[in-house]
Length: 274
Image (cartoon, rainbow, N blue to C red; front, side, top):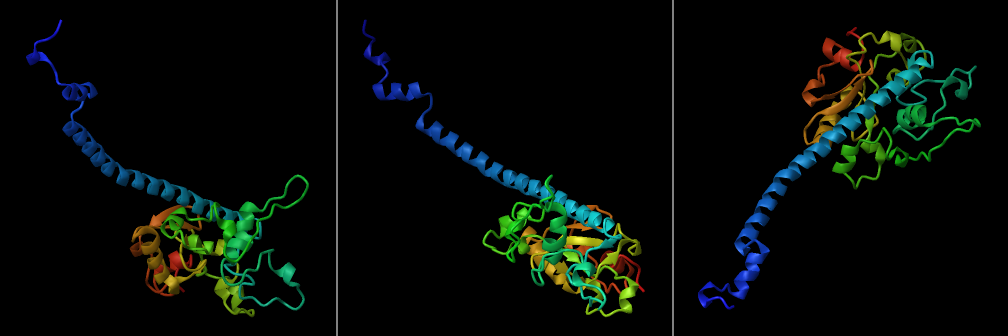
């Protein structure tokens, strides 16, 4: 039986109805999906950034603990930021006996490559063989390790020197008084006895830095540059001598002379001013 012509649905309209959406409705759905995605992307990016913050904060804490462990195993002395650490080897002692074993890669990254990196990653297996990394001046062995700041890599993926994607050791910690009586080109580069640094909860050990793996109060402007380049003016990651890690704004890092200001001295030197 045929329907009256007035009740028949044209073929084109019937096909649209079968689809369930008109063209206008489909465009509206697409627009809504686009808006929702635009709202979600910043949230996803923020979550990714926060995950990297948490990961890197945990990593720098592990580096700090490894350094303190290194010291406890070697006469309670922190490793020098650089070896030979500004010290002249006495005539009666060999260089090998006077300093701990380290890789000499020049002025950059000595604490990192030669001492603390080895503390974490160099291990003897059951046959007495030591696992080895191909340590080089560009720091390629740091990729994927605790020493790699993943946010720095994301911000500057074209950087080839991986030492610029890691952290700096504070060399301003107060050196032992014995170094006033011996030949030393820079006492602040020597090993330091932990028991002399009485304000360890406030004393800086490592902090974010893009330029150098060794830093002191006079290089403080590098921290401002790091804050801008890595975190767009946000907080830097730091670990202290008591092993705790936290994030600091540049304004929280004392800028007064540590030789005379108490807060600055405790932060940079681990002691009160002289």
